[in-house]
Length: 333
Ligand code: CUA
Image (cartoon, rainbow, N blue to C red):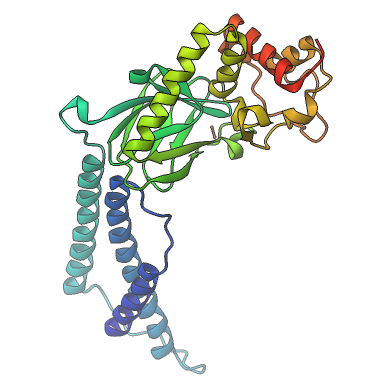
């Protein structure tokens, strides 16, 4: 029976391991986490198959004939078996606990030298992410990382509990109002990924996503330079209102829900601004931002847009945002 069960276990464990169930590994943490994952999954597959295999075989082999009305033979305990079925699971469970603890500690270790990693502040709010790069004095709706450079993420939330997760990086961490949580990621593969909110946080939860880009050293430097240029241009030019409004649009997370050609956003959670804005009065646009329930576009009920942009944005930011939208949409004043 045990041989049959073990064979079944080896086959199911092997099949489970060979099928690509998991997303790409794009961080050093993903390798740690997957190591634990497969260790636990294979132990579970083997133990399950062993128990199920023995049960099915015993049920078939030792079943009573239809006319057998006798009691079964009396059995009481089996010290040898009991020692083994206590000792083996204990060893397995302790091994899983130790491996998990070691993997988590290693995954969250940062280099001792602060020059060797970056810190990014992540703020979650219904229903958008924003990322502040303190060293660059920059806030963006997109998470941009340099390949092979560890990054410490400091997370918080403005309203309710959210959770940060990029499947390819594996690490997952809650973003909780009023406290700071942290996690560490060392991306190993250039490419584009998604931050996914994994804590039910309201009607917009399933669409609460943000882009992640992992860039090569050269592309990362170019992205940093582009940001500095953008900030410099805003200060000097007479076009200040427009420049600020565009960055408010990105920073406040508008682009994670709305399509707007000028901002290169193609999100479809909320109304397409290229089609709804033209013809709207300045006041109407302002109302839609600060009180999104006042008037809801056809097909977008129930409203999922947060109603607290008046608190999130300063008066100047709101003015700049409205001016920007009026301008890019050619809306009437
Ligand atoms: Cu934020 Cu779910």
